[in-house]
Length: 281
Image 1 (cartoon, rainbow, N blue to C red):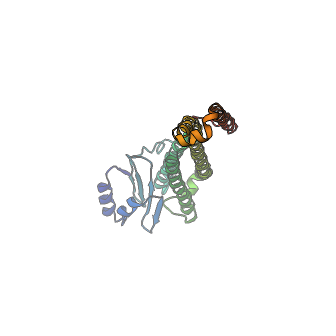
Image 2: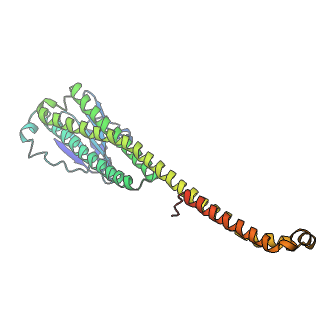
Image 3: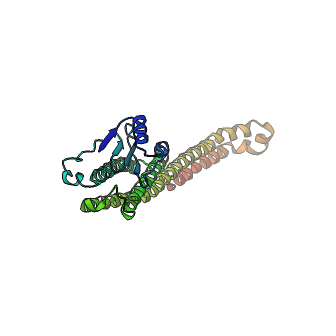
């Protein structure tokens, strides 16, 4: 008999009444797929990416298949009517459909992460890249554990999950799991590429700042040279002994020399500035 529970308290109580010694609290704390097999029952816990349904727990025995989940296990009756009637058919189909639904949930989470990465390709932000990397590693770990769970369920020949009843469908499901696992693993390398893009963008921004600083310093240097002309003239003619002794008869030559030197400094400074090919953003 299949029984669904939306409240964990009712689920615990019913399992205890049926002499199913399940540590539900420990199962709820796990962040990866897990199963426990004993002579009387098999317990499976699979986390989900849903705020309304973060955990899925199945406890299957000879007489009962208890399900704590808010998932709609579609196809439970209409697609497997003949198999459900067989020994352990109910528990086998419930576990299979749960695995299938969880994989669908994981694939949707991957698509969300992939969409974020596509945006980061255009505008790499290191903090968001690191967050996507953490989310992707968590998802990859979960799918790896899900694949490992399907292997263990088949290798240990758990009676509550008779894979021979659904051999073809089960092989397809495992193939899908491996497909999504490989996609996750391939995108882990993409995270490294996004980090490189972010570092290149940061270096480009730093170079732009250095360029702007160079522009400012070059401009201030040229301005300081221009300002020095009246300062030099004022300094010379502000000291009577110096100006009378050396420059009184050559005032015009002195002014022309200073102005010429200033103009040449401006010209050479401008040529140097252009040779740097500075771009001011």
